[in-house]
Image 1 (cartoon, rainbow, N blue to C red):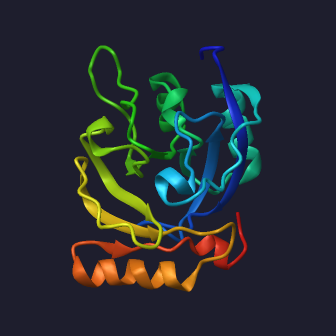
Image 2: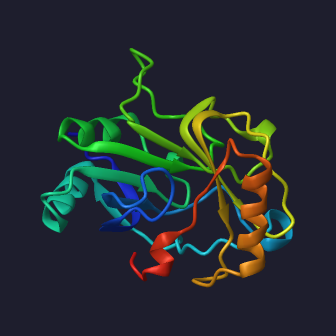
Length: 207
C-alpha cells in the first residue's frame, strides 16, 4: 500500500442520520478542510461541523481503525469538510478491496477520484449536497442530491442528475426552527418529486 498520509478530523461508527440511507450503520471518515465557507448571510445557514483540526494517517491505518471500531460494520462514508480535496483513487480502492460499501458526501465542486487508466471509480453511493452556484457544480450524476434550506429559500434546480432529490431544513446547532421545517414541508408539497430529509441524528442525540 502507498504510504501517502491523509489529514483526518475524526473516524467513528454510527447510524446515518439523513438521506435515503438514513438508519444504516456506517463508519464515518471525516476529512479535515473544506473549499467552502457556509454562512447564513450567503448560504441561508451556518456550517455546524468542526473540520479544521486533524491528524495524519495512511490508508492502512484507516483500515486498521475501522476494524477496531466495529468489525461487523462494512459500510464507510467519506465526509468532511470536503472529502474530495484529499480522497484519491488509492484510498477508495483500498477500502473497497477490503469489502466495504463505499459512500461519499460532497458539495459537488470537485470531480470524483477515477482510476487514471480505466477512468472508473469504486464509489458505491454518492451524496451531492451543493453549497455553490449550480454552474460551479462539477459532478454530473449522484445517487442523491441533498440541499439544505433555510426559511424562504426556494426549490433548487440541480444540474447534477440524481435518482433521489432531498430537501433538508437547516438546523441552528441541534435545534430545528419550526418555521424552517414548515417551509421545507411546503416546498415538498409544491414539488412532490422532492422528499424531506431531516437530520435524525440530532433528534436522537447520536453522532
